[in-house]
Length: 89
Image (cartoon, rainbow, N blue to C red; front, side, top):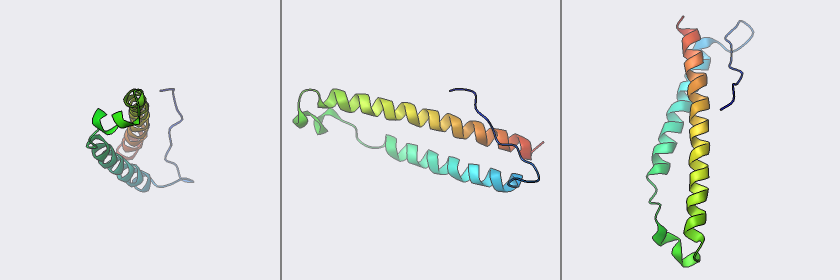
C-alpha cells in the first residue's frame, strides 16, 4: 500500500475520542464482515454447471476481492492505530 495521509487530531477537527470510537466501530464491523465472508462455502460444485471456466473465473474473482479486503483492512488498521496513538499520548 502506498504511503497515505493520516488524520491529525486538532481543535478544528473531530475530537480524539470521537474519531477513535468511529474507527473502532468500523474496525469491529469490518472484522465481522470478513469473518462472515470467509464462512461462505466456496466450492467448485457450485460453479461447474456454468461451464469449464466458471470455477477458474470464480477463484480469480474471489482472490481479487480478498486482496482488496486485505488492503481495506490495512488502511483501517493504520488509521485506527494512528488515532489511538494520538489519543493516548
